[in-house]
Length: 522
Image (tube, rainbow, N blue to C red; front, side):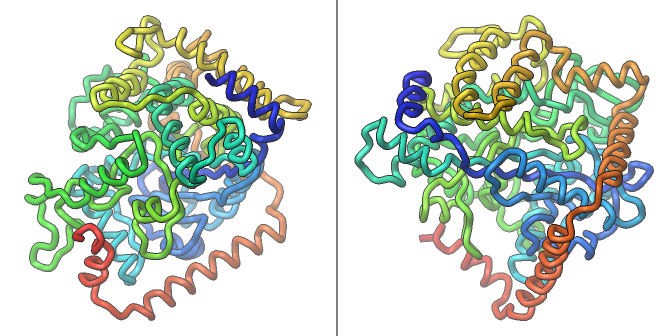
């Protein structure tokens, strides 16, 4: 199916895959020079976390999130991300560092994690209270885990070509939604390969566990690790949270996906009811339902549509359909100063195209559980030599299945390469294919080997890499005057925007919240 579709597309338009939109969201903890979590507020020199489009915060005041606008190439995407880093580092207070790994620095329990604040506007208060709710539901320490999200949309000429070769004569938006959801289903089938190839969290600091038994061996007095783990971040110890196990969203259509999310947002959940919403006038969460808002549901990949001011994500999807995919399965890479590389982007782009072009039958609930179990197996033991994964009721060796996927990616990479003499996409695929032949090449294996050779704890390894990254950006040539002015203007504009928003606020917060969720009561 993939080869046939690709041949027809290439015959219709050899450049049909060129362009598209590529963006990245990268999280990093701010830490003190000794590795402790920074307790300082979000630096004003970085602008407003509420209104800045490129520099914001995630869960904590100390958890920065860098967001690139859509770019036309992998190089431009990484360059913009590097520019954000280069702008941010000299504006951090007290010689703070950006933590170089997904799993957090040494933490001292939930009380040591400051929840992000966004000012006194209603939307700012809502974002803060939502995060308070996450802390009550899952614990604040769990929210200090960092990740990288890759955003991707296919170019317009791809859709023109695909309409033609598929003979589609119906509604264009329906066609795109249908194809993007086929991609979503196949990412659930094959996305475990992303954890194997790019997982970079095989160890963690014991302080993260808060005294819990992780069922993992000790690396040293302060470190637990998985001997064959790829991404503890994506295991039951991290984002694969058992509290959300009962929420299974259908990937079979946009309507079913939206209905599942909205059902969870309006469905009471007894454990959260016991927390309380606003006892004695002190807000603890936005609601006591299974989800407070859509973004609380953690998935490996999400369909996205840019939202308008005050619009919920599901309303945006219902209004305009799917605009792009957000891949959320990437760990922060300690071996890349920006936390991610062009080779990751290139592989992911080819892999997402593969997922779209591959046959994608509907997934029933029992199959979805088995597919998620594949991800869980790879996260906790992906480098185990005898590891097998389930597909269509049959156990299959991981390496064999991975080789088959990479073989099917090869012609996609050649088409993406076009007339590039460096054949960058094919070269990126070759690098990843080598990891299937030699697991010691995976970042998870490299981290553990390096920790053993250097006799370092996880904390010491991450500290060393964090310092190296700061030194890397400090040594770069100065940012261009035009880009510097662009960042400074956006920083000033964000502060003005937040002030204007707060000054214009006219309705009580309770009324704002009721209006935000009003359509769910209909």
